[in-house]
Length: 379
Image (tube, one colour):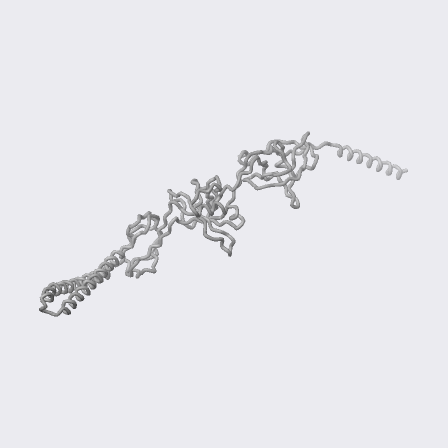
């Protein structure tokens, strides 16, 4: 009797548990919350970027043209200097001595010329009167010509000595910013010595390299640029410079030159753009990126990149359908534009796509939509 009671009690307990489980299974969970946004349709400019480095428009190496000891530096390093401004001085004494020697030799040559001229003037009437031989007059004339040549040669030596004396003042070749001096007071310098560099920084050149495939796209404007012709194929948007901190340089640039050949080792061709630099912010040696608009995609469909899921090489987008039911579509994508993605197939204007919460939905899932806000809008 006792065993029957235990069996009956156990059966009742199992029935009670089963009933509770079935009741719990029939409870309804609220629809998952998702953030949605409407597909945007508009003309989208497509840009490309290339790594770039900045250089001066002209970089003049300042080298002395005579040898000697530096005795003075007359400019402040890193300052703006003008063309012809004296930057360094070399000890002028040796050059002054050479000039004085040349002037003395010139005086001697001139004295010899005067004597030769007097000999010709004295012997010419005598030769005409046959008082002396004609050969004597010819000798006098030849001596006069030789003395004149010596005077000219000595005058050239004086001029050269004066030039060399002037070269003891080492001057800037251009207007620009002078760099740190590599020559110090007391150094023995010569024509192979580089004392400093002066760079013209307004404008600056910004160099970047196009690959062969990219070059083919730009071949016509590059050729027209080389010939100095205005190019109708040149990108409408100006060249932009993105600095190393991610900021965009305030002033647009323009294409300036292309190298004569594609480098066979790298498969690239070097391009230069010019950027105004009145404030001197840009300096040679800086790195950045050049951005150029290459095309405009008309009536492009844009969605946030977060709305696109890549699965085994295919792209899928969750679309909000009737009755707030989720629909999963396979899409084809184009270029990325900022935080968005161009969709070339799979969507139509006005579609609402799920951006956040896509991982919680399946085809046919009823969702609770709310507007998607970008980080900028949330902030």
